[in-house]
Length: 101
Image (tube, rainbow, N blue to C red; front, side):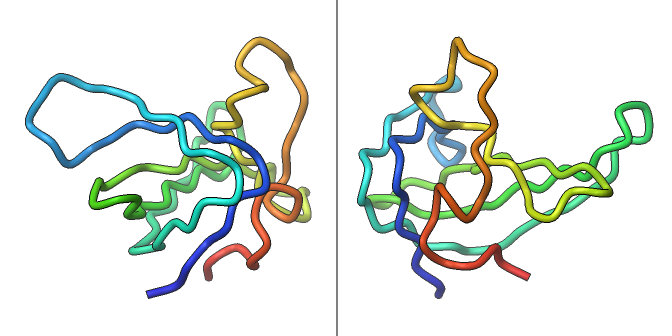
């Protein structure tokens, strides 16, 4: 299992418990275990959408990413400090490891 280390605090959806949808904050410098990825193309917005399913402290979490077809790398859509801003955070600045293939 691949380990990802984040350089920014993330706010993510927990997807493996039976309670109503909830979010957790993952502090900067945490170790996140990558499990699998799903990808799709959103034709209306002309964007590639990636969902990375990962484990953090025994909880299954979802890291949402998106990439324009002409883009060089995916944008990470769950940076905590970016909730009310429009700054783009790309994979290489958010994680130390390369984007999973």
